Length: 332
Image (cartoon, rainbow, N blue to C red; front, side, top):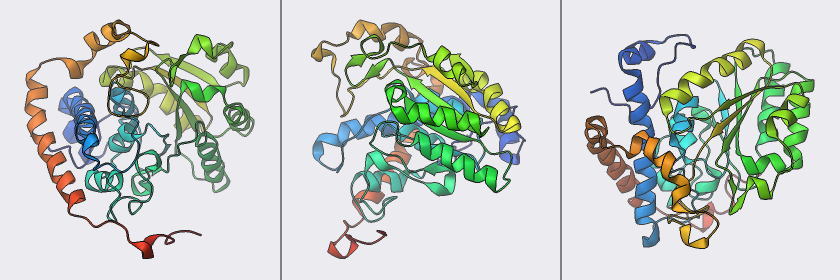
């Protein structure tokens, strides 16, 4: 079987085909599923070891939302940049971020992405187009707009800059400023909202008096909804044209994808005992989630992925912690 562990990319008919793409064409859905399962198993392993204190930072797990990242990144090129947020593990892995350095960063080791000083909420892998995350809600949206502006000034056509955020971020002032600026200057930004209906423990109806489609289109920005956010193949297929639109017109667009967060807002556990939601609220979603089904493909993939995770964790655990001399390095 083709090993996608090191390079979790998938074919899309909307992109220029590379040799790697041609290899994957015959089995696209299985490879999307592989990439989504890989993220799920990484997140579940983090949850499993979290209480051992190996993980040196808070974690916002992507369990339940893996297919969004996989489907979107299947339509992106290596030159496209994704600006992720604090719940960014899925996009980091789907875009090709290395797994050993990922675990090393979570464990606070010198071999981590940021030498163990950033942690889960500030992941960055510029070499694969994952631009630094932030724990501040909505803060990276303007970064994506700024990068798109720089690209336009330099006449770099054909690139897409993805601003990834949750529905709670649409309540922030910088979100509105970014929509206005991107529309005004016609910048190639895909505003990507993973809408799990929650901001910590508050539902949208408790927070928002506006309707997002009307708000976005008021700025003259194209809007699209995807409701099947549990299915990586559907996300890949349905996001293809809007990403192509941004790439070819070099103008902004907005994509909202319905998602479901299975675990608590921050941490490895469940939170149904808090009373703000019920397990039944997720029942339909889980029923349709292909990663929750007992299939031969998943069983076949799982052993290989688990072995990759074991190697990555071993790498991290055998790495040194930063010392006092590292404290102010890389600070300007």
